[in-house]
Length: 365
Image (cartoon, rainbow, N blue to C red; front, side):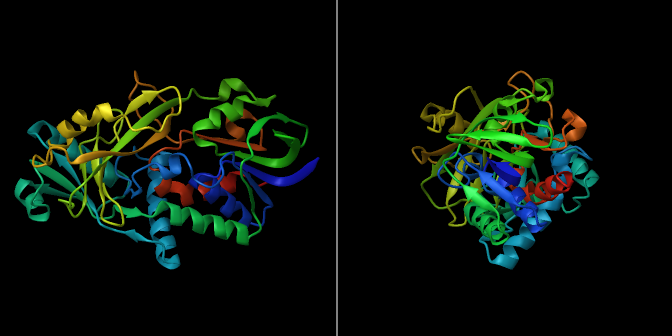
Protein backbone atom coordinates (compact mmCIF):
# COMPACT_ATOMS: atom_id res chain seq x y z
CA UNK A 1 0.00 0.00 0.00
CA UNK A 2 1.31 3.44 -0.94
CA UNK A 3 1.71 5.91 1.93
CA UNK A 4 1.83 9.68 1.69
CA UNK A 5 1.85 12.52 4.23
CA UNK A 6 -1.12 14.59 2.96
CA UNK A 7 -3.89 13.83 0.50
CA UNK A 8 -6.06 16.64 -0.84
CA UNK A 9 -9.30 15.53 -2.49
CA UNK A 10 -10.35 17.97 -5.19
CA UNK A 11 -8.37 20.13 -7.62
CA UNK A 12 -10.67 23.10 -7.64
CA UNK A 13 -9.28 26.47 -6.71
CA UNK A 14 -9.54 25.73 -2.97
CA UNK A 15 -7.90 22.32 -3.20
CA UNK A 16 -5.06 23.65 -5.35
CA UNK A 17 -4.46 26.59 -3.00
CA UNK A 18 -4.40 24.24 0.01
CA UNK A 19 -1.99 21.88 -1.76
CA UNK A 20 0.31 24.83 -2.48
CA UNK A 21 0.17 26.08 1.11
CA UNK A 22 0.91 22.63 2.54
CA UNK A 23 3.73 21.96 0.07
CA UNK A 24 5.32 25.32 0.84
CA UNK A 25 5.38 24.28 4.50
CA UNK A 26 7.38 21.20 3.54
CA UNK A 27 4.54 18.67 3.60
CA UNK A 28 4.39 15.82 1.11
CA UNK A 29 1.16 16.41 -0.83
CA UNK A 30 -0.85 14.31 -3.26
CA UNK A 31 -3.94 15.84 -4.93
CA UNK A 32 -6.62 13.47 -6.20
CA UNK A 33 -9.09 14.79 -8.79
CA UNK A 34 -11.78 12.75 -10.57
CA UNK A 35 -11.93 15.12 -13.58
CA UNK A 36 -9.33 15.30 -16.32
CA UNK A 37 -7.88 18.65 -15.24
CA UNK A 38 -8.07 21.40 -12.63
CA UNK A 39 -11.11 23.51 -11.77
CA UNK A 40 -13.75 21.96 -14.01
CA UNK A 41 -16.78 22.62 -11.79
CA UNK A 42 -17.54 25.53 -9.42
CA UNK A 43 -14.09 27.11 -9.87
CA UNK A 44 -14.60 27.67 -13.60
CA UNK A 45 -18.32 28.41 -13.61
CA UNK A 46 -18.70 31.70 -11.74
CA UNK A 47 -18.49 35.46 -12.17
CA UNK A 48 -14.67 35.68 -11.72
CA UNK A 49 -15.13 38.59 -9.31
CA UNK A 50 -12.65 39.67 -6.65
CA UNK A 51 -15.02 40.56 -3.83
CA UNK A 52 -14.46 43.38 -1.37
CA UNK A 53 -15.84 41.61 1.72
CA UNK A 54 -18.88 43.78 2.38
CA UNK A 55 -21.85 41.43 2.70
CA UNK A 56 -20.83 39.09 5.49
CA UNK A 57 -21.40 39.32 9.26
CA UNK A 58 -18.58 40.61 11.43
CA UNK A 59 -16.19 37.89 12.66
CA UNK A 60 -17.58 35.34 10.18
CA UNK A 61 -15.05 33.20 8.31
CA UNK A 62 -16.44 34.54 5.03
CA UNK A 63 -15.73 38.12 6.12
CA UNK A 64 -12.27 37.39 7.51
CA UNK A 65 -11.08 35.19 4.66
CA UNK A 66 -12.55 37.43 1.96
CA UNK A 67 -10.86 40.58 3.25
CA UNK A 68 -7.51 38.86 3.86
CA UNK A 69 -7.84 36.91 0.62
CA UNK A 70 -8.64 40.00 -1.45
CA UNK A 71 -5.36 41.65 -0.49
CA UNK A 72 -3.42 38.42 -0.99
CA UNK A 73 -5.06 37.77 -4.37
CA UNK A 74 -4.33 41.24 -5.74
CA UNK A 75 -0.70 40.93 -4.59
CA UNK A 76 -0.39 37.42 -6.01
CA UNK A 77 -1.70 38.50 -9.41
CA UNK A 78 0.43 41.64 -9.55
CA UNK A 79 3.63 39.82 -8.64
CA UNK A 80 3.02 37.01 -11.15
CA UNK A 81 1.50 39.14 -13.94
CA UNK A 82 -1.82 37.29 -13.87
CA UNK A 83 -4.54 39.17 -15.73
CA UNK A 84 -6.87 41.07 -13.42
CA UNK A 85 -8.47 44.50 -13.15
CA UNK A 86 -9.54 46.54 -10.14
CA UNK A 87 -12.56 48.04 -11.92
CA UNK A 88 -14.93 48.58 -8.98
CA UNK A 89 -18.65 47.94 -8.75
CA UNK A 90 -21.92 49.69 -8.00
CA UNK A 91 -24.61 48.13 -5.82
CA UNK A 92 -27.78 49.84 -6.97
CA UNK A 93 -31.16 50.60 -5.45
CA UNK A 94 -33.84 50.86 -8.11
CA UNK A 95 -36.57 52.04 -5.74
CA UNK A 96 -36.65 54.13 -2.59
CA UNK A 97 -37.44 51.14 -0.37
CA UNK A 98 -33.97 49.73 -1.09
CA UNK A 99 -32.02 52.79 0.04
CA UNK A 100 -32.02 51.68 3.66
CA UNK A 101 -30.56 48.32 2.60
CA UNK A 102 -27.65 50.14 0.96
CA UNK A 103 -26.84 51.88 4.23
CA UNK A 104 -27.10 48.57 6.09
CA UNK A 105 -24.60 47.07 3.65
CA UNK A 106 -22.29 50.05 4.15
CA UNK A 107 -22.52 49.67 7.93
CA UNK A 108 -21.76 45.96 7.74
CA UNK A 109 -18.78 46.66 5.49
CA UNK A 110 -17.41 49.17 7.98
CA UNK A 111 -17.81 46.61 10.78
CA UNK A 112 -15.53 44.40 8.69
CA UNK A 113 -13.03 47.29 8.30
CA UNK A 114 -13.96 47.79 4.65
CA UNK A 115 -14.09 51.56 4.82
CA UNK A 116 -13.88 52.54 1.17
CA UNK A 117 -17.57 52.23 0.23
CA UNK A 118 -19.15 55.51 -0.84
CA UNK A 119 -22.85 56.26 -1.11
CA UNK A 120 -23.89 57.93 -4.37
CA UNK A 121 -27.16 59.68 -5.03
CA UNK A 122 -28.93 59.30 -8.35
CA UNK A 123 -27.00 62.12 -10.02
CA UNK A 124 -23.61 60.95 -8.73
CA UNK A 125 -24.27 57.40 -9.92
CA UNK A 126 -25.34 58.69 -13.34
CA UNK A 127 -22.12 60.70 -13.56
CA UNK A 128 -20.15 57.46 -13.23
CA UNK A 129 -22.46 55.29 -15.32
CA UNK A 130 -24.79 57.33 -17.60
CA UNK A 131 -26.78 54.26 -18.71
CA UNK A 132 -27.61 53.21 -15.16
CA UNK A 133 -31.12 53.56 -13.74
CA UNK A 134 -31.14 53.86 -9.95
CA UNK A 135 -32.23 56.11 -7.09
CA UNK A 136 -28.98 55.53 -5.19
CA UNK A 137 -25.94 53.29 -5.17
CA UNK A 138 -22.92 52.13 -3.21
CA UNK A 139 -19.58 52.38 -4.98
CA UNK A 140 -17.07 49.66 -4.04
CA UNK A 141 -13.67 50.68 -5.46
CA UNK A 142 -11.79 47.55 -4.33
CA UNK A 143 -13.95 45.06 -6.23
CA UNK A 144 -12.30 43.57 -9.31
CA UNK A 145 -12.15 40.73 -11.81
CA UNK A 146 -9.53 38.04 -12.38
CA UNK A 147 -8.61 35.35 -14.87
CA UNK A 148 -9.44 32.42 -12.60
CA UNK A 149 -7.91 29.81 -14.89
CA UNK A 150 -4.58 31.63 -15.00
CA UNK A 151 -4.76 32.00 -11.22
CA UNK A 152 -5.36 28.25 -10.78
CA UNK A 153 -2.53 27.39 -13.16
CA UNK A 154 -0.15 29.58 -11.17
CA UNK A 155 -1.22 27.93 -7.92
CA UNK A 156 -0.76 24.49 -9.42
CA UNK A 157 2.65 25.41 -10.79
CA UNK A 158 3.87 26.65 -7.43
CA UNK A 159 2.45 23.60 -5.65
CA UNK A 160 4.28 21.31 -8.09
CA UNK A 161 7.46 23.37 -7.75
CA UNK A 162 7.32 22.44 -4.04
CA UNK A 163 6.88 18.76 -4.98
CA UNK A 164 3.09 18.42 -4.70
CA UNK A 165 1.74 15.83 -7.13
CA UNK A 166 -1.58 15.96 -8.98
CA UNK A 167 -3.33 12.81 -10.17
CA UNK A 168 -6.35 13.33 -12.44
CA UNK A 169 -9.18 11.03 -13.51
CA UNK A 170 -8.88 9.42 -10.08
CA UNK A 171 -12.13 9.27 -8.14
CA UNK A 172 -12.12 8.60 -4.42
CA UNK A 173 -14.51 5.72 -3.81
CA UNK A 174 -14.34 5.65 -0.02
CA UNK A 175 -12.06 5.43 2.94
CA UNK A 176 -11.56 4.18 6.46
CA UNK A 177 -10.14 5.62 9.65
CA UNK A 178 -7.21 3.56 10.92
CA UNK A 179 -5.27 3.91 14.18
CA UNK A 180 -2.68 6.38 12.94
CA UNK A 181 -3.75 6.99 9.35
CA UNK A 182 -6.60 7.42 6.92
CA UNK A 183 -6.97 4.79 4.24
CA UNK A 184 -8.36 6.02 0.91
CA UNK A 185 -9.80 3.79 -1.79
CA UNK A 186 -9.49 4.73 -5.44
CA UNK A 187 -10.10 2.55 -8.46
CA UNK A 188 -7.61 -0.31 -8.37
CA UNK A 189 -5.58 0.59 -5.31
CA UNK A 190 -5.51 2.06 -1.80
CA UNK A 191 -3.54 4.90 -0.24
CA UNK A 192 -2.75 5.77 3.34
CA UNK A 193 -2.13 9.30 4.61
CA UNK A 194 -1.51 11.09 7.89
CA UNK A 195 -3.66 14.07 6.89
CA UNK A 196 -6.72 14.07 4.64
CA UNK A 197 -8.11 17.35 3.29
CA UNK A 198 -11.59 16.99 1.80
CA UNK A 199 -11.91 19.93 -0.61
CA UNK A 200 -14.30 18.19 -2.98
CA UNK A 201 -16.71 21.11 -3.34
CA UNK A 202 -20.09 19.85 -4.51
CA UNK A 203 -19.10 16.34 -3.42
CA UNK A 204 -17.56 17.13 -0.01
CA UNK A 205 -20.47 15.68 1.97
CA UNK A 206 -20.51 12.54 -0.18
CA UNK A 207 -16.79 12.01 0.43
CA UNK A 208 -17.23 12.45 4.19
CA UNK A 209 -20.11 9.94 4.22
CA UNK A 210 -17.94 7.41 2.36
CA UNK A 211 -15.28 7.25 5.10
CA UNK A 212 -15.94 4.31 7.41
CA UNK A 213 -15.64 5.16 11.07
CA UNK A 214 -16.27 8.86 10.53
CA UNK A 215 -19.08 10.37 12.67
CA UNK A 216 -21.85 11.00 10.15
CA UNK A 217 -23.80 13.24 12.54
CA UNK A 218 -21.17 15.96 12.04
CA UNK A 219 -21.75 16.15 8.28
CA UNK A 220 -24.07 19.02 7.30
CA UNK A 221 -26.84 18.67 4.77
CA UNK A 222 -25.92 19.53 1.20
CA UNK A 223 -27.91 21.63 -1.29
CA UNK A 224 -27.07 22.66 -4.84
CA UNK A 225 -27.98 26.04 -6.31
CA UNK A 226 -27.62 26.33 -10.06
CA UNK A 227 -26.84 29.72 -11.53
CA UNK A 228 -27.46 30.49 -15.20
CA UNK A 229 -25.51 33.14 -17.10
CA UNK A 230 -26.54 34.97 -20.28
CA UNK A 231 -24.15 36.98 -22.43
CA UNK A 232 -24.92 40.29 -24.13
CA UNK A 233 -24.18 40.64 -27.83
CA UNK A 234 -23.36 44.35 -27.87
CA UNK A 235 -20.80 46.74 -26.47
CA UNK A 236 -20.77 47.10 -22.71
CA UNK A 237 -23.06 49.89 -21.47
CA UNK A 238 -21.10 50.10 -18.21
CA UNK A 239 -17.47 50.47 -17.20
CA UNK A 240 -17.93 48.87 -13.79
CA UNK A 241 -19.70 45.83 -12.37
CA UNK A 242 -23.38 46.48 -11.62
CA UNK A 243 -25.10 44.57 -8.80
CA UNK A 244 -28.69 44.89 -7.60
CA UNK A 245 -29.47 45.00 -3.89
CA UNK A 246 -28.81 41.45 -2.58
CA UNK A 247 -31.66 38.98 -2.42
CA UNK A 248 -32.31 36.38 0.25
CA UNK A 249 -30.71 33.53 -1.71
CA UNK A 250 -27.90 35.39 -3.46
CA UNK A 251 -26.52 38.63 -4.84
CA UNK A 252 -29.10 38.95 -7.61
CA UNK A 253 -28.69 38.94 -11.39
CA UNK A 254 -25.73 41.24 -11.79
CA UNK A 255 -23.71 42.50 -14.73
CA UNK A 256 -20.07 41.54 -14.92
CA UNK A 257 -17.32 42.13 -17.42
CA UNK A 258 -14.57 39.69 -18.24
CA UNK A 259 -11.03 40.73 -19.09
CA UNK A 260 -11.95 40.87 -22.78
CA UNK A 261 -14.72 43.36 -21.93
CA UNK A 262 -17.43 40.83 -22.71
CA UNK A 263 -20.71 41.46 -20.86
CA UNK A 264 -22.56 38.71 -19.06
CA UNK A 265 -25.49 38.66 -16.67
CA UNK A 266 -26.13 36.23 -13.83
CA UNK A 267 -26.34 34.13 -11.88
CA UNK A 268 -29.88 33.48 -10.81
CA UNK A 269 -30.73 30.83 -8.18
CA UNK A 270 -32.29 27.57 -9.34
CA UNK A 271 -32.34 24.74 -6.78
CA UNK A 272 -31.36 21.41 -8.35
CA UNK A 273 -30.77 17.83 -7.26
CA UNK A 274 -28.52 16.72 -10.12
CA UNK A 275 -25.61 18.14 -12.07
CA UNK A 276 -26.64 19.68 -15.38
CA UNK A 277 -24.68 22.61 -16.76
CA UNK A 278 -27.08 23.32 -19.60
CA UNK A 279 -28.31 26.91 -19.45
CA UNK A 280 -32.05 27.03 -18.86
CA UNK A 281 -33.08 29.18 -21.82
CA UNK A 282 -36.66 29.37 -20.48
CA UNK A 283 -35.38 31.86 -17.91
CA UNK A 284 -34.45 34.49 -20.46
CA UNK A 285 -37.59 36.60 -19.91
CA UNK A 286 -36.86 36.66 -16.18
CA UNK A 287 -33.38 37.94 -16.98
CA UNK A 288 -34.72 40.70 -19.25
CA UNK A 289 -37.15 41.76 -16.51
CA UNK A 290 -34.54 41.87 -13.73
CA UNK A 291 -31.81 43.55 -15.81
CA UNK A 292 -34.15 46.28 -17.09
CA UNK A 293 -34.70 47.41 -13.52
CA UNK A 294 -31.20 48.93 -13.62
CA UNK A 295 -30.68 49.08 -17.41
CA UNK A 296 -34.04 49.92 -19.04
CA UNK A 297 -32.44 50.27 -22.47
CA UNK A 298 -31.47 46.60 -22.73
CA UNK A 299 -32.43 45.77 -26.35
CA UNK A 300 -34.73 42.91 -27.23
CA UNK A 301 -33.09 39.79 -28.68
CA UNK A 302 -29.68 40.76 -27.27
CA UNK A 303 -29.17 38.06 -24.59
CA UNK A 304 -27.84 34.60 -25.37
CA UNK A 305 -27.30 31.52 -23.15
CA UNK A 306 -23.67 31.41 -22.05
CA UNK A 307 -22.88 28.95 -19.25
CA UNK A 308 -24.15 27.72 -15.89
CA UNK A 309 -22.54 26.89 -12.57
CA UNK A 310 -23.63 25.06 -9.43
CA UNK A 311 -22.83 26.33 -5.95
CA UNK A 312 -22.56 24.10 -2.86
CA UNK A 313 -24.98 25.46 -0.27
CA UNK A 314 -25.51 24.61 3.37
CA UNK A 315 -29.11 25.86 3.33
CA UNK A 316 -32.02 24.99 1.09
CA UNK A 317 -34.77 26.88 -0.71
CA UNK A 318 -36.88 27.22 2.43
CA UNK A 319 -34.14 28.86 4.51
CA UNK A 320 -32.33 31.90 3.18
CA UNK A 321 -30.44 32.69 6.39
CA UNK A 322 -26.70 33.37 6.29
CA UNK A 323 -24.43 30.35 6.43
CA UNK A 324 -20.70 30.68 6.83
CA UNK A 325 -17.93 28.68 5.25
CA UNK A 326 -17.75 25.47 7.28
CA UNK A 327 -14.33 23.95 7.96
CA UNK A 328 -14.52 20.91 10.22
CA UNK A 329 -11.37 19.76 12.00
CA UNK A 330 -10.71 17.86 15.24
CA UNK A 331 -12.77 20.26 17.36
CA UNK A 332 -15.85 19.34 15.32
CA UNK A 333 -15.52 15.61 14.69
CA UNK A 334 -12.71 14.40 16.97
CA UNK A 335 -10.10 13.34 14.38
CA UNK A 336 -6.95 15.44 13.99
CA UNK A 337 -6.15 13.69 10.70
CA UNK A 338 -9.24 14.84 8.74
CA UNK A 339 -10.27 18.34 7.63
CA UNK A 340 -13.54 18.71 5.72
CA UNK A 341 -14.50 21.89 3.86
CA UNK A 342 -18.23 22.35 3.31
CA UNK A 343 -20.23 25.06 1.56
CA UNK A 344 -17.26 26.83 -0.04
CA UNK A 345 -19.14 29.03 -2.48
CA UNK A 346 -18.86 32.78 -3.09
CA UNK A 347 -16.53 34.45 -2.12
CA UNK A 348 -14.44 31.29 -2.46
CA UNK A 349 -12.11 32.53 -5.21
CA UNK A 350 -11.35 35.74 -3.35
CA UNK A 351 -10.90 33.84 -0.09
CA UNK A 352 -8.84 30.97 -1.50
CA UNK A 353 -5.36 32.04 -0.40
CA UNK A 354 -6.55 32.96 3.09
CA UNK A 355 -8.54 29.73 3.47
CA UNK A 356 -5.52 27.74 2.31
CA UNK A 357 -3.34 29.24 5.04
CA UNK A 358 -6.06 28.58 7.59
CA UNK A 359 -6.33 24.91 6.59
CA UNK A 360 -2.55 24.50 6.46
CA UNK A 361 -2.34 25.70 10.05
CA UNK A 362 -5.13 23.34 11.14
CA UNK A 363 -3.26 20.49 9.45
CA UNK A 364 -0.10 20.93 11.50
CA UNK A 365 0.83 17.97 13.66
